[in-house]
Image (cartoon, rainbow, N blue to C red; front, side, top):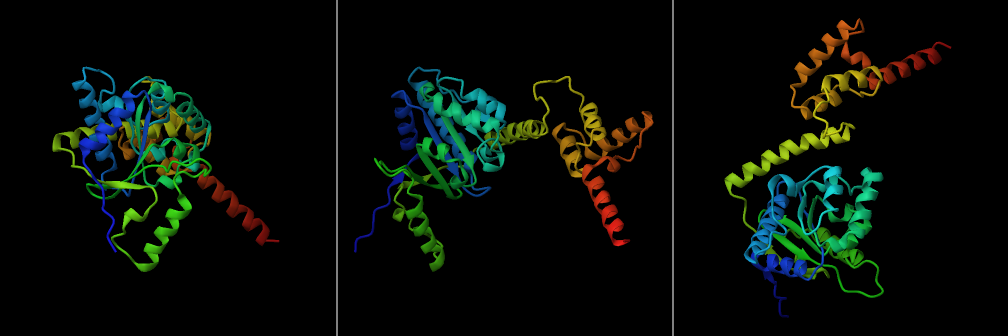
Amino acid sequence: MARKVVMRWSMAKIIQMIVMTLQNKFDCFIVIEGNRGLGKSTLAIQLARGVSREFKKLGSIDYKFNWRNSLIYTKKETKHFWHKWKCTGIGDEMINVAFNRDFYDEDQKDIIKMMNMNRDHCNFFMACVPQFQTLDNQVKGLCKIRLTVVRRGVAIIQTPNRTIYIKDKWDTATNEKIERGWLQKGIKNPHYTKLTTFRGVLKFPKLREKSEAKYQQVKDDKRNLVAKEEMGIDVDDVNVDPYDVAMEMLVEGKVRNGTFLDGFAQANKIIPATFKSQLRSRLQKLGKDHKVANYYWEKKAKEKNNSNVGLFSSN
């Protein structure tokens, strides 16, 4: 029996396909999935820069790649992106921003709504996530290309099947059955060609040292913005004093434990030990209990629970 020929894609080929899609006035939404450390962000950056170069050759300023503007981390940045026209965006660590069911809030609803409504804006967007299957069904429906990074420098290309009546264009049930068969047989090198959505294999290079350093710098800076956003801090307000915010949260019983405070301090680029020391000093000056741990609502809840247990056991 003849073996199925595996179609190997070059970076130049997939970049050209993306460029043609955008030139035809379509949007291009790609999901890049894979385990941590395999190079999802590397692949996204390589594709973004490649598309930018091709449009530059055509004499166009559209889809220009910019490290700080193109790499997107917060929900606010994501919502802002979908209002743009003919731009490139990389939702790095996208699962932390909008699409996981654990984060299904008003911001997520707004983002999905904008993705649907603004498809005529012809944007090029790539979302980096651990697993495609955790995405919202509407988001999966918008995805044109699914790139699964199986190991460093290698990804398999999948696209939705062209169907008329079948709702699941990604043929999840069939492909899941195939994958379960691999697991049961203990196959370490699966024949991805058996997947009904398989289109080929893509090899991609790693970033150069200078580019990797630039990426890490932007990622570290923007992760602080994510932490602030999750804590309800306005990332655009440079006049906010983190000590004032923390003091208010402590007094109002909004701080769960020391881990929360440590993360808050790091998000504001302050050493956690120094941060807590300053909080103790401020509390003392105000004549309040200066033991920070006494304000944690988690500790208060435990003490209350223990008190109730003691009350019932004495009867």
